[in-house]
Image (cartoon, rainbow, N blue to C red):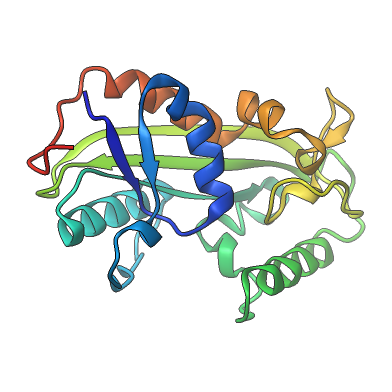
Length: 210
């Protein structure tokens, strides 16, 4: 069994979410900041979340010579034809810090949905995950989804990105109002990671010996 996984991200929020699920199962999860050297970001030119997750997992696994887990995630809104989709992180086209990009992305999203009903603003978070061996072989893939509706007024201080705007009708709150434990229990990333955890039991480590 693979005991140490490199997660292809420097996003502490993502690291925390994945660690909360995998660490109790006996896995160590390290981010790109642990590598100790700079790795050029691969060009994510896939047209689906799955394709981009594969691109990242394979590129970082080969660059570091270690088993690597990568994800590509974003928001799909039915009324917008699935947008922002794979462009979720840079939907607004604004550069800057993650916080500045998140604010601009959310502002654009709410403008696009102005005047639409709750039914019309149905949406979901999607997370595609891919595990690649040190030599770039794809070992496992999973996909998770997290359904809700988009609301104009942001609520909650947990999470990141579009979390404050994804309202969960059955709970009466947004994704950002859930505790980390509650969010992991039903979120797109939590779903994808739990599926991956089951697959890890039957996946042998790559040549990195982790």
